[in-house]
Image (cartoon, rainbow, N blue to C red; front, side, top):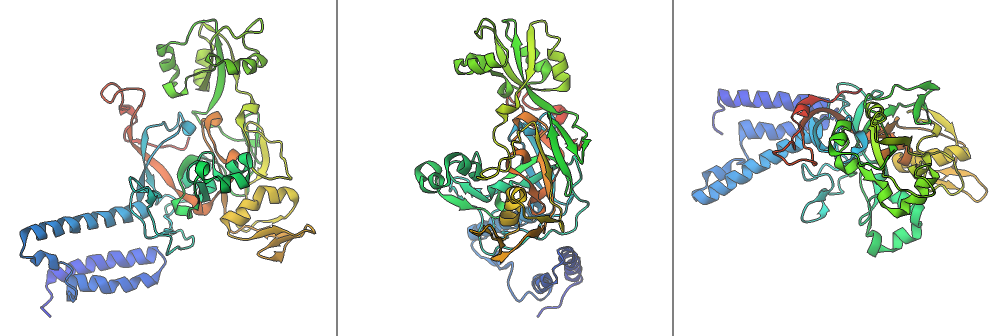
Length: 468
């Protein structure tokens, strides 16, 4: 063995210290066996890690050098993506005007503490499906349980949070929106499971490979949350509304169209401008809402999401006849979905009261609690739950009259309240689904304009994401 140089000792010491700190942070001392590899790379060199550099064929050496660089880059990106931050693009308008479609974000994993991956062997920068090949981007084995290491803080009320979609544990491959559970509630379990031509294969996804969603955390573990006439209440007190809170409104004019300049003044994108009166099938509904005259819809009626500021502005337009908030009946089904024997009567605009589960809290297994929390017990905390013919509740095969939660849960909502499928639709977000916190908008593209004609929102670039 050759004599070990001072430079080798220095390099080894730096990497060994960093690796030991990483193992301590991961709270897994078994990782310290990896020091054996570091010793060999920098000191003993029993394995010829860089042996390809001695290849006599220049072309082969160049190819191997490229492969070496690519592998190093992929490993570095994988580690950064898992434990430090990841890139995320806002795909839907559920958080407008706080976050806009086309915003590209840095999502900090350190803010709430990074998770040890459930599926450690996966392709970096791909959530669950490899493009082109259209196959899984991860191996299902090994599959590790939930573990989160220490971060800079915890989820707080009104934080904007990126999380794995809880109802995305099971998907119908050909029809992923609405989610599997709403598909079953709408079309029936037998149809969804057997009609593969329409719905495709039914797949299960591990927690960390479910689609990423971004919403605002409105309800914390242990809160009693309710929505009354679109106002959120926490433990009976009015919650502070986000600064850019939006609702959908129906706007009737005197016959004039709303101009492009007016839409820009209201800050309403082209995709959000819906002229509902142009479709005759909507006329009966619009008449029942009090629009039109003489039993006919003869003036333009728009459906527009607007902030309080935009609402005040449009009310002053001389061509606007009347403005009405969208009726709650238009909101669709609410959580819990697919519960045959229990109906809450809740709507999107009047929801709850509902208790958000907290770790260590015990509930009685009443009819209502079984309807509200069976997904938490079964899907998120991995228990079996059955109702015996005599009405006895069986958890993991044993009779039970109560249940104690293993996780904290959160209630997420979009700021664009009437254009957001959120916890009112699919329920709670377990703590093991929390991914991270958006901290910076590094790019923002406006699809309503060309790239060189206002397509880049320069004022939003390198702007911090705030909770309010």
